[in-house]
Image: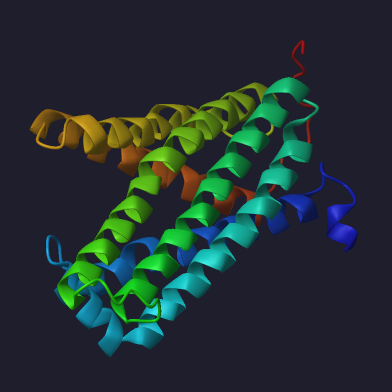
Length: 240
């Protein structure tokens, strides 16, 4: 627990960086890999048939979600203390925005559970046919997936604030902060596109480019924390 005592130390930064990588791997597994194997777009019946056949993989994805969210809570708090000397107001706002993202992710799991219960008959709905149950389960999964549009708004805000703090701190490369700001906007663009402009090809291309930038920037920031930590200079302070 010694590493948690000094938020300006390299040991503290390394723990934060390690947790960041846990988020990256667990999140990639739960959000991208598992749904990519199980989901059949536009066919809820086939999707739930896949889940029934590979239930272990489905539950492994939920474990990945829980592991990711646990690490997110720790990272949110640790980043707050790391950047509080730079600007306490912005650091607290960044932490709260990330925690709001986690809260939405946690709420999404309720719809995950409801869709599975409906599809496999756990919930007694005798007045519903099997087809109606599957359709209702598909609706629950759609609501679950729509939660992504919501948490991305909070994550975009977090990255804008975190990028600003990184650039102002003097403790980490300014280029990483700039990448978090520019690329982080891609999450907002993705939410807007998926909600209102699903067929906009240009918006899709811009979104992909921005998300690539923020992915490289986040991994770069995590690796910098893990391998090098903060520069041994006094951070630049700003008025609160």
